[in-house]
Amino acid sequence: MLNRSVNTNILKTYPKFIALSVLILSLLAPIPSHGAKGYRYWGYFQATAGASAWSAAMTGPSVEVKDGDVEGWIFVFSSNDIPAVTPMMDPDFATLCGETPETSGKIRVGLVVDFGAGNIAPDGEIPNEFFSDCVVVDKGSLGLDVLEAALDVRAGDSGLICGIAGYPASECGAEIDEPAAEQVVAIERTEEQENSSSQSAPILLAVLALFLLSAFFLNRRRTR
Image (cartoon, rainbow, N blue to C red):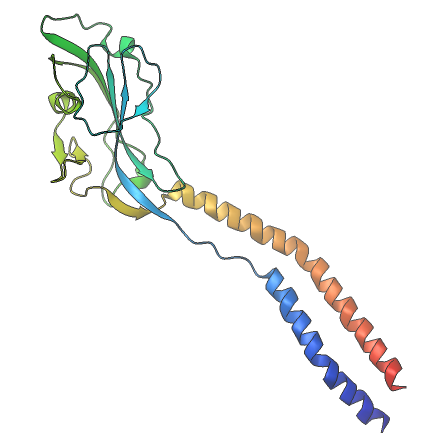
């Protein structure tokens, strides 16, 4: 009779043990991460005469440029969480055009073209080497005129600049996963979460063990 009572009480207590165990194991499980997407494209930046920092262009290269301006292009990745970066070189007109004399009817415009990092390059392609120069064009020229005077340009039907100097070869504003460098950050964060979980696991398991042990002895006392 005593054994039957003990077994019945234990069976009644087991669901509580199982529920608590499931709860603790769910706390120990790592949280999965989800990769984000964004776009790689040619970002366009400008610096008016005398400026020492880049400003993101609010329009395409359809604005008239002046003597002393610097135009900047960079092949970038950006998303809702990751803003586009500026060209690696500051818009230093003196460095770019300091040795280029003024010419009547012409203007001097600095040009910087950064082909971006290798981790966002399309499959099978390698970014071109960084390009900078002083471009001399007619007065009244637009930003696009400056770029086309120095390098080959491929534009889409909408007017979006798709390729500069043959890079990229064919795509235009493609949607891609976050580049490898960002994925490394995500992996490191995931590892930190796993490490945190592994450090807290012994504590949670100890609590579970104490609870089970206490419940077992309490159950024995009740059946005596």
